[in-house]
Length: 384
Ligand SMILES: Cc1ncc(COP(=O)(O)O)c(C=O)c1O
Image (cartoon, rainbow, N blue to C red; front, side, top):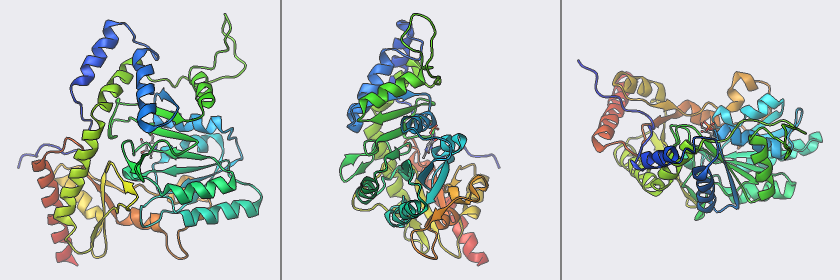
């Protein structure tokens, strides 16, 4: 039997406008990590997310690293972070020798549990070392429950870094994500809701800090006629060509969000009637961009046979992120659960699966995914 066309998890979705922006960069010879597209992309993204300043960077990870630099986080410091995330959220801290304290998810949003955060902050207080930051993550496009989280961090005097890499275009109580942290971070990696092939953005209302980040991201050269450094930096800027791609992608962001939400709705309509299958919930305060449609399978079903069946049919799916507190690299880290005797993020990892969710997914491709999921569940039920 010949293999059917591959269905990817979240492929790039070009509009056609990108090429005009690239041509403009070539025509004006702005083939550099600065230029008019970079400046416009920063302005447009700051306006969209409602912050005062934005800095276009080579990746979301670079933006996370610079956030840590701006907050003066150093070796031996403590940072609290949501456990259920992609490793890039904490990789820059790990490399700095920072102690990461992990916090569970709440079942309502799958994001950082305010209850568990409270326990983590209390533990840091008892141990005499308060965290230098709390990193919150808007998982699979969905905002965290910002109000209780920000209130806790405010009263503890701890700044928030918002990892909004996956949530561009999502809302919390009507306000766009990307503007909730002292520093917030976006990613334009190839699998994100919009992409520059690779890239990121640092967002903040603190214009002075963003100016400092700009300096650090361009090798930290002092304003001097020769190459002089009172400190050293990084080469983290986004190219003018890629910023052009980003600007064109931004023009279509709203459509992309609506397409992904339609993809979610179709999956939910077809699969949520199946007993023991549930979808990532959306609390009333959230409007997610539904970057990925994620579902969970309760006993007797499990996600791995579904993933393997989809793979055999040339359909890409992925397990839910493996929480950081379960990673060998963070074996001995502190971890605070949402409630005693229950580890929500571990449950989501063991029971969850991400389905193909791209905004260019056709209805017939989605039909293929749906019938393959149904087939696998049928097979599992027979074996149970
Ligand atoms: C939650 C999260 N944080 C950070 C990143 C890192 O972004 P980038 O790949 O642009 O470095 C990603 C995605 O790749 C992500 O999903």
